[in-house]
Length: 213
Image 1 (cartoon, rainbow, N blue to C red):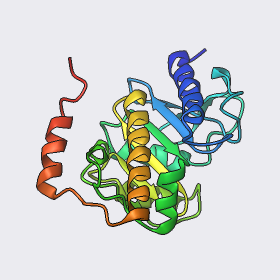
Image 2 (image 1 turned 45 degrees about the vertical axis):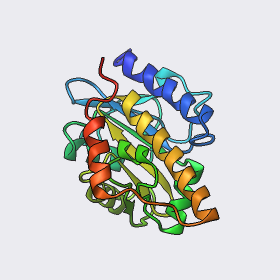
Image 3 (image 1 turned 120 degrees about the vertical axis):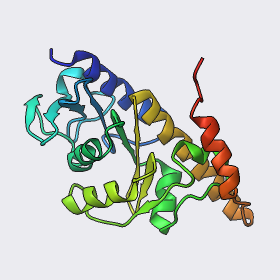
C-alpha cells in the first residue's frame, strides 16, 4: 500500500481526535504530507474515525488530483493544500470542531494570550472570517489569517492547526482547545488578565526549543 506509514498515522490521530473530545463522528479532518512533499494522505469524506482503515485514507497531489483511495477526500481538501503550498515548513494539518475553540469562533472572538500555552499557535489565535465549508473562499481566508500563526479559529466553524509533524500539529490543536476553555471559563467569572506582547515574546522564544532533548 502506498504511503502506509502516513495513512496509519492519519487513522491513529483521527481516533485520538475523537478520544480527546476534539470532534465527533466524522467531523473535522487530518492530513499528512510525505517527505518529498509530492503527495498528502488525507481523511476521506464522511467516514467515522473509529471505523476508518488506512486503506480508506485518500492520497492526493498538491494540485488536488487523487492518486489513491476508494472514496472522496475530505471536503476541506482546499485549505489543506493551500496551507501546504503557502507554508513550506508545514507537514501536517489538523482541523477540529473542538467545543471551546468552536464556541469562541461562534462568538466571533479571537483567542488572546490569557494563558501562555496560546504560544503553541503564536502570540494569539486569530479568527478567520466565515465562509461556507469546502469553498475556495474559505481556503483563501484560512491561508491569509494563518500567516505568522500555527493555528486559527474559523468563524462559526472550528479550528485549524499546522505543524512540522502530525504529532506537533495535533499538540497545537490540543493546547489551543485547553487555552480556549480556560479563557471561556475565565470570561464567565470576570475579565481575564491578558499577557503582554513582551511576555508572549519570551514564551515564543522558549517554545523554539520546547521538547528538544
